[in-house]
Image (cartoon, rainbow, N blue to C red):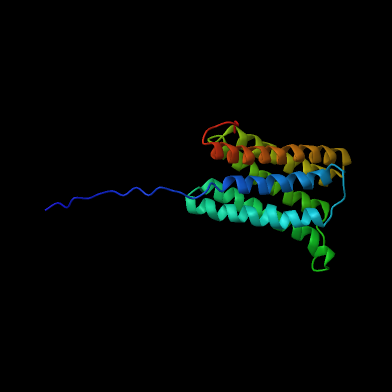
Length: 192
């Protein structure tokens, strides 16, 4: 005897976590790179943004992407959220006399590893939207420019990296806000 089997469709009514992650990344990246461009010194505002909005908000977005089954979003937001925490710790631990500050080669190695990771993530964006391609492509370039600036001590390269980082951050802000507006209006009013 064969039983009558019914399939049940479960509708996902949870919010899209990507705008939170993109905005946490984007706003924090803009502010850090305004510093890198020489417009103001490193201060507690940047560190607080790195811990709270760059770090915690992206980790929250990571957990929400995980629940949605989005591996790319989980890895991206989790990794970059923890990047911000590690970056703040790189700056704060030496100030607290808990660890030595990294020398230029160590910091360049850190930045190159993040650049390589971002480059592979960029390859993943080739199956996603153009906005994400711009963000991840620009971010990979940013990490490599920052690494070159550290190794060479060339202030011009670091300055260029600062302005390139401002562009990268604003690209993420644009895509994050575009997703909010498109979902709010129920149609694509801003290209992503």
